[in-house]
Image (cartoon, rainbow, N blue to C red; front, side):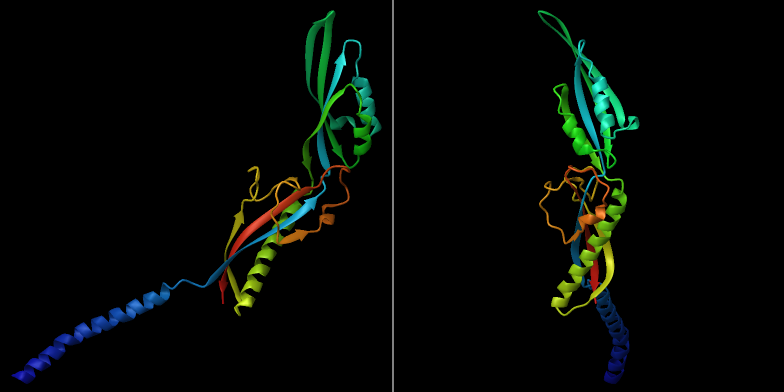
Length: 240
């Protein structure tokens, strides 16, 4: 009787043991599968100082009914290499007031495109006339800007990889494959993500890599401050 009871008990416990063992092995496997991979996340950045090769000037001249200065203005432009296709009329505003007699004062605004073919320094010097009311630079650009952006992007990615490699080397580890690459928005004016195109003192952030400014070419408008093109990237790598 006792033997039969023990035999039945062993038979009844066997499926339970198998089930518990199977559950334990499954939990161990899931724990191994859910283990977080070893990774390293770094940022890399690069910048290039570029000479603008094209600028636009807003010029306001004043005239009255006794003195028409348009012809003088156009002579100065032509003298310094500004062709007709680089001159654009913007607006004209007439102001009247009475001072012993009615007096007409007219402000005429032009936009002048200046590139490397124009004697920019000579133009600015010749425009120092009493009837030139105001001159300001409304736009600076470089015709090769897209190519320079690509170059700075590549340098930023290289800088991130180099940083991750030497950090892991210090720990006796090796760099693995790339998991993700993220562009970082560093543009302070929010006009173009990941870039700023402004004066070199607009941001004090240091970059991992500085691309030679000589790569911005020799055809530029002299006397105009250089511009800074900067790119930053965040990359996650596996650790071998």
